[in-house]
Image (cartoon, rainbow, N blue to C red; front, side, top):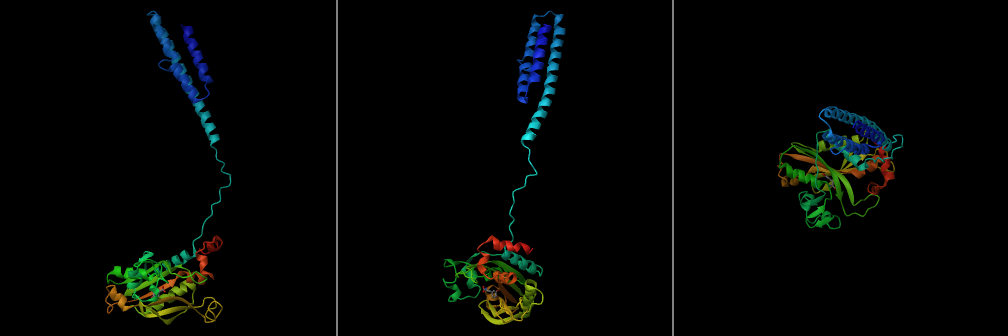
Length: 345
Ligand code: DAH
C-alpha cells in the first residue's frame, strides 16, 4: 500500500515541477487533489484494510495530500512571477520614444479683440449680453426705429430667411432685445458682441459676415459727455495711451443726435500718414444718444432717463491694431495668417 501512496506522491510532484503555466498547474491540481483525483482514489483502498491498518494508512494519505498541496502552492507562486514578468516584458512602453507632435492652435484675432473689449467693459461694471444671429425683423429694424422703407431693409442688403426672419445686420438688434427685457428699469450698462451679416460682395474692406460690439448705457442724466469719456477711455486702451477722439455729426435712425467717431491715428500720432490718408484721424465707430422714440417704444420714460449707444466693428479695430490690410484674412482660415497671432498673449 505504501508503494501505491509513494507512486502517486512522486508522480504528483513530478507533474507539479513539470507544469509550465498556471493553467497547466490547475490541471495537475484537479488530477491529484480533485474530488475524483488520484489521492481521493487512494482513500478507496481503505475498505480493503483491516481496522488496525486503517489509521496509519489514512494518516499517510493525508500527509501525501498535504505535501502535494504545498508543492502546488509553491509552484503557483513561481509561475505567477514568471507570467507577470512575461506580461511586463510584452507590454513594456518605451518612454524614451519621441511623442507625436500636437499642433496647438492660436486664438483668432477677432476673438482676441472681443475678449479685450469684454475685459475692458466688465472692468467698468458693464454686463456682457448675447442674442440670436437669426433675428426677427422686429428687433433688427422695427424697434430700432428703422422704417419699412429704409434702404437697409432692402433684400439687396439683408439676408432674409422669410419676410420676418433675417440674419441680424447689426448688434443693435441685441440692444433692442435688452431694452425690451429691462421693462423700463434703469440703469442699464452692457455690451453685446457678436457676428452680423450683410449682402455685401466680399473685397478687401467688405465681408458678408463680420463682427460688431454694441454698447448701451441707460439711466438718469446720461449725457453725450459720458459717451465721449467712455469712448476716449476705450480708444486709449485699444490703441495705446494718448489717443484723442472726435465726434462728427451723422445719422442713425436709433440715435439722436448721432455721431461718427474718429480716433487720432495711432500710426502717425495724428500728423498724417498713408493709413489715415494724411488726415491724422481714423473713423472707428458709430454712436449717439438713444433716440427718445426708441426708449418710449421699449417702455422707458424718455423724460426721466436717457442713454447712449455705440457700435464698433471688430475687424476694423483688429485691422488697425495689427496692421491687417484685407478683411478677408479673418475668414479664409489660412493657418499661416492665424499663426502670426500667437505672439499676442
Ligand atoms: N448699428 C450701426 C451699424 O451697424 C452701428 C451703430 C451706430 C450702433 C450708432 C449704435 C449706434 O449703437 O448708436 O452701422
